[in-house]
Length: 178
Image 1 (cartoon, helix red, strand yellow):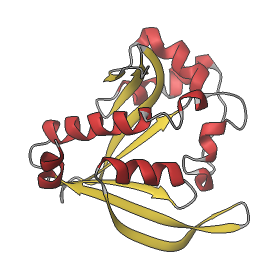
Image 2 (tube, one colour; image 1 turned 180 degrees about the vertical axis):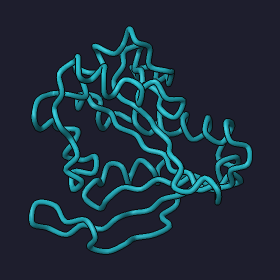
Image 3 (cartoon, helix red, strand yellow; image 1 turned 180 degrees about the horizontal axis):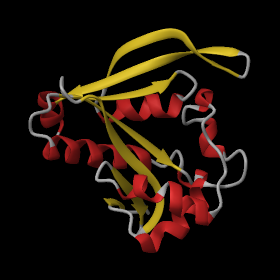
Image 4 (cartoon, helix red, strand yellow; image 1 turned 90 degrees about the vertical axis):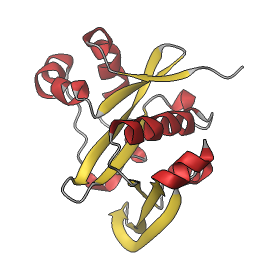
């Protein structure tokens, strides 16, 4: 039976859980797919997480992905350029037991709708991934995002070049999918 996916603000009561799923040692499985070429992941203990990262996770531009009420990941959004109304979204499910079950696609669907609702002036939402993350590409396409660009061989990782992949959806396209 499919589990329920909800998005909500991450409460401080969930910070211990969040820390445990994000910071799974020196090389967590999820980071192999989430922009690993940036090499920006660094394990941190809980006290430093609270001091250095808690405000980021409290932001209105981050929500927790809850699967049957249990925090399993996050969705985010950020301005590529606020002045020109260019906004991008992202998603991470940290617990690999919940990959390939459609939970990420469902969360991205909910987040896209919420983002269009929160920003009525937006005509476009973007999502950037890389050609090594086939699951993210399939998920974006499955829910209605269109491939808008492929910047070839600009992500060098593990002695191999990958493409940067740009997806997007227009408000009118999204509304017609509902």
